[in-house]
Image (cartoon, rainbow, N blue to C red; front, side, top):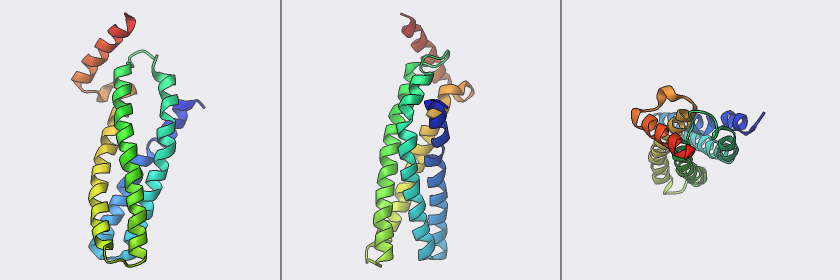
Length: 162
């Protein structure tokens, strides 16, 4: 297995796990279950932890694919920038979830505020997860690239030849 294999192995987890956490948190809010909310916090923490190997295998994956036909540095760079932002927000969601888990467990007066902030913040993380996954998928899946990306890709390949 090369670095691209490892990246593909890990990169779906930080996207899928927060979706599950979001749904579990929504369920906890709807049925007013503190246990379900704590479970959602743990899922968000696990998702943040899964971001670490996905993020750190990205450079190696880039080395494997950057010189392949049809793949330019611009499309990889767009994914890399999006992934950095997503990783930072995923880690922040994990940290916020640690605070939420602790405040819920200790029955702190601000635990409801933390829960709603975490729930709202998870929506932003999910949006960036989708964007990061899409930009990553566009690297090898030309069928999902928009026309502008394809035009930029062709321009980048011409510039790379010069």
